[in-house]
Every structure is written in C-alpha cells, then in structure tokens.
Image (tube, rainbow, N blue to C red; front, side, top):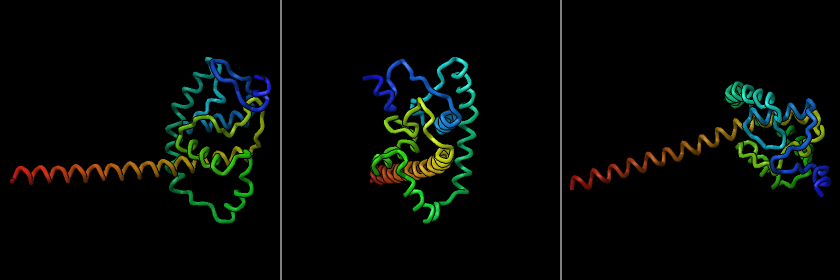
Length: 179
C-alpha cells in the first residue's frame, strides 16, 4: 500500500522523509518555494548543513525577493491576449480541474501553501522540464507581487473604514457632550 502511494507521487507523512533526487530542476523549484515563502513541505533540507544553508539562504534571499517583487510589479504588465491563449492550451500540465488550478494558484501566491496541490507532483524524480520551471518562476514572482498589492489595497480599505468609524464615533461623542 505505502509503496503504491509513493510511486503515485504521494509522499508519506510524519517524521520520515522520502528519498529526494536533488536534480537541478528539483533544486531550482525548492529555491523558488523557499524565496517566495510558500513552503509546501514536500522537499526540504534533511542534513544539519543543508538546514543551516537554508537559514542563511532564506535570510538573505527573502528580503531580496521582496525587493524584486516591487520592481517586477512596476515593470510587468498582463500578458498579451495571444500569449494568454497559448498558456490556456499549455495549462493542462498538472491534469487539474479549473477549480483545482484556481485553488492551487491562490494558495501559492497568498503563501498559504497547504501542500495538497504542488507543482512538484512527485519529488522523488525529476518530472519537470526547465521551461516549466522558468515559467513557474515568472508566474510566482508576478503572482506574489499582484497578491501583495491586492492584500495591501484590502488592508488600506479596512484601515480607511476604521478611521471613518472612529471619526464618526468621536463626532457623536462630542455632540452628546455639548447637549
């Protein structure tokens, strides 16, 4: 039973880890996941040296990535309609339904990262090509910048509504004291 799950790309849970082949592609995707703070939990450093490297890498890389998101947001525009149609035809790489794709996308760019849907379907083998990895990087960078803007706008809206409520409450209290 466990063997069939592993061969199907479902890693075992608990304190045990699967054997991960650290190919260039898996390493590249792990770097993307680390720097974007998504953290699916399917590939991670196992040795003390790897864990220490990850701490240093993330401590330096995450702030630089945040700065990069700022510049990407400034420079990147929505892809042309032709490119969008091309991506729609190529978009069936993971064999997910439309809703699953939207759910995965939101969990990824909002950095929730539940791990129930990941781009590394089977971390025990190199099943992604480099083009897919590069497009994933571009999508993650743009998506994270976009969702950060969206969350910032929502937070600003709530802050403004709170300020208005406080102002209205203060004015009401002043009027009541005058009476």
